Structure formats: C-alpha cells, structure tokens
Image (cartoon, rainbow, N blue to C red):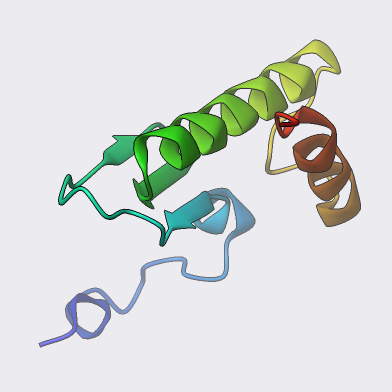
Length: 91
C-alpha cells in the first residue's frame, strides 16, 4: 500500500518537503552501483567519471547557494539551473 494513503496529513506540496535534486547517470558499463545521497540531493548510477562530475556539480551548487545566504527551498528554478550549468565540470 502506498504510504501516502497511510499518512493523509503528509504535507506533500510543501516546498520544504519536496526540495530535492536528483541525478541519474545512465552510462555505467562496469557493473558498479554508485549511490551518493545528501540532505537535499541524491545521485544514482553512472560511470565513475560521470558520477564524480555530478557529485562535484551539486556540492558546488549548494556551496554557492550557501554563500548567497540561500537554500534550495528559497532559490528560484532559474537560479538553481544557472548554478548547475556554471558548476558542471568542463572536459
């Protein structure tokens, strides 16, 4: 049974509950299952290189938000998108 039905008062639409970034890497060929989880983001899969790049990108993104005195809950989607683009390692 879906747990939401067991807890009808769960604030599903509350941005503080829903604010979470999710990264999914699809290029893994070595059979490893890579998972990195933090308070406000999760990264699953990917080759070692891809997984490391996604992890670095999100750590730097959250660091930049913190330096601005913001959190993911009170930053705009455009701001988060710009920071992710800025912090993505270049080849």
